[in-house]
Image (cartoon, rainbow, N blue to C red; front, side, top):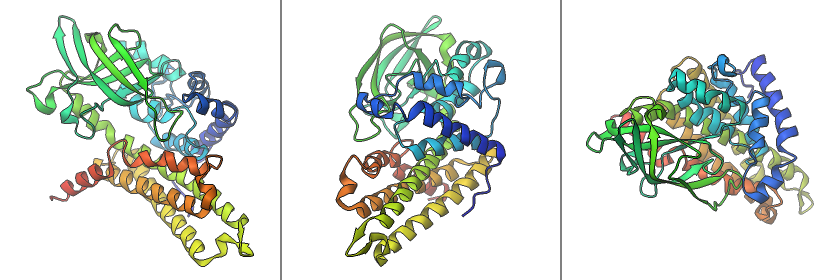
Length: 380
């Protein structure tokens, strides 16, 4: 089905993104896979192409656009290529908005130019060994000491945890205040007591560095408080809908490309004297996938329209997130089956996609959490 959400400017950025991938990503992707991390130079290259901070203020080198459709275009093209790409979604959709909307004028001058140029890589540290979807279980804490906060605790599953120069740490600053007791503190790379643990050995997404982070009496100046003290939980809730929509966009775009390549494989691969795609079961399976992807894209486009109108609700984003990631998981699984034994071979993209897609129903809020959020909105 023809998509009506994008205009000429968006398609121009799509062409730029494709050019970036062809020149700055594809030649190095195998090496990044071998090293299990994307080289920092890829972020700097993305900055030169204008693919980071296009939604940041122009006075700091950004593009000055609040149009989330530009985010969607970049996410789609990166996902079509695969997962051996720099984590621009994290820079633009997940962490970048905190630095854009919550920083003071002084913090903007200090941090935004580096983020926009790709020189500064950012991350956010929420999840802990004993606290995942339940943010209320966070135990990382900070105590005020004059003009500083003394930070202690550990985080895990932190995307870009190895490469990151600035880490937004979700910490408890008032144990007695419930949801009003959280604050966002920005920890910088070289702060004493900030310790990076091991780079985690994941099932998939090998080039996306994911790490354990430890904070042992890290002294964070008041000048590094992001947003308001005690408002951390509410800052997180404000940004989560766009993060979840971003995950949905990436999931469907990636699954669409896996399906496209599988469709061609089904036409080319012969069995019993005919293409495997011509067997009724396989033909029906490919038709079902195509339909589910089309329907999912249309819901995503409706959500994008809502974002542009500043009208996307947390519930609508939750619906997009759980539905699209579950569809993507189902589609990629079906594509592996259609490849037969070759679908289990890492030399075929579909095998890598199978490992990579599995996390999408977990990160950013599990499918179960999304359904619970929706159900509560129904008054249940």
